[in-house]
Image (cartoon, rainbow, N blue to C red; front, top):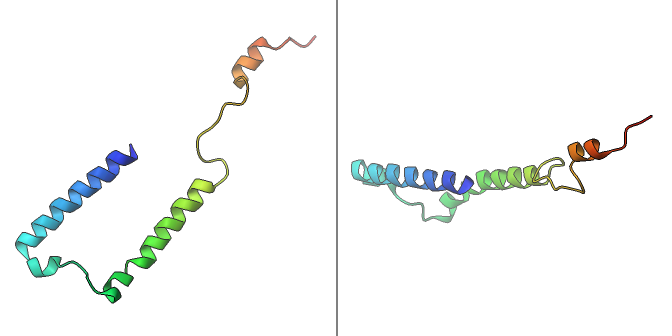
Length: 81
C-alpha cells in the first residue's frame, strides 16, 4: 500500500509540474544553486527523523507469534479444580 501511495503522489506532482510549466515556465524552474537546495535539508531531516523514531518505538512494527496464540493456549489448558 505505501508503494501505491508514493506512486500516486509522484503522478500527481508530475502532472501539476507539467501544468505549471505550460502556464508560467519561469515559475517552475528547477533549483540549481546550493543555497536554494539547502532550504530542503531541514524538512527532509525532520521527515527522516520522524520516520526512524516511529519505526523504532516500542509496540510498533509487526507482531511475531511466540509459541501458540493465547486463545489456543486457553482452550487446551487444563481446567482449574
